[in-house]
Image (cartoon, rainbow, N blue to C red; front, side, top):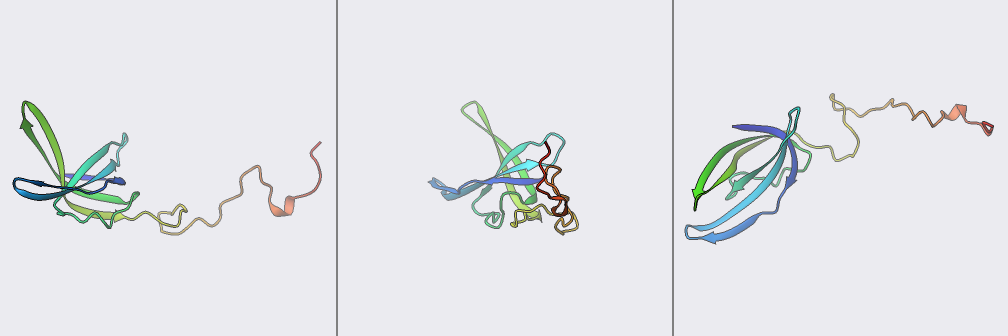
Length: 125
């Protein structure tokens, strides 16, 4: 199954020791690209996927497996990511990017600001 969306948060890695050996888990929160976006937390177990290259705002496609298990009458569901494809990286410039990759150049000033040639010292009253 694939989840397409934007990286919202990369959580700190957790590790521990079990009867089967040591383990490491890192979780990633993705906001889906839908009319009603959903936030989904997926987990990478034992460094199967390198999440260190991802940044909040990156557009990705995550390939996941969904698995549920029962313990003491309760069911627990894991969404395990096994592959992440970076669709587009977030711009670090802080300015909005146009679809063609350029930056906007001819944005008019806000209506409350007059153009430089129109400025005068006359009061409106």
